[in-house]
Length: 275
Length: 70
View (spheres, each protein chain N blue to C red):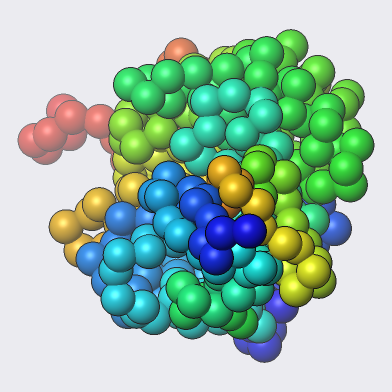
């Protein structure tokens, strides 16, 4: 689905293959909280994302029929990843996944089984239960979870297509709170790890990608910015920059300086005429 | 047989004709052909079954669609 612009050899990167789809952009973007569908469409396009999330909700039977969100998503460019946001038990999440599949005819599902409405932190037991059932039903399950390394390993073992540890609570903008946990997750988990939730600004995306995340999923950081379209561009660039830095390999940290200019051949030190 | 029966749609009480099928309800709601999915009593009803699923008194129907989300 990638654009036609040729990429220089030194910037080449493989697509992100996950859950049976292939993504040219490693930024996944949510469609919530925009001021309008027009703004949603523009932000998605500018972000360069090829996978967008949507939520499943009751049809409002009292409202006049307006345009549908789907009319504003370019499905030739973007895969749609429906979520189970708002589900606080495994059974609701499983039913929501089945409803999403019935609408979109897609096996993709972003599974969220949440603990409580205040923290929106994932409920680990319900998440495991729902993952097991949805994998059994043939879904490609992208699992929102905590950054606990054992939890992430168990989800991958159950057959999750992707594990998606939260950098920090959903919509909190706190960034990556525990990079060491994420480093361990990235070492132990052998399905794509997509950092989901908590991104506040572009450097959070770059940081996650520099650590080796396969991708980053965000929503509020763009939709809630003062200028969402400008932030969509910033996130696009940060995701690419972080990924390229990861592939290029950062230098080790050292305690003392290491001159960039030669230490030999400098002129005689000091000032005034030679004695 | 009463001409109408009472069901619940998205949490709201509603009367439908006693011989109504699920597709009739969707049509009445202006949702036939729309990007929606339907549960009857917490069980998904596939689109291909909307035309053959009869409604019964006390049915709890959920009609959902896609909205913006993260």
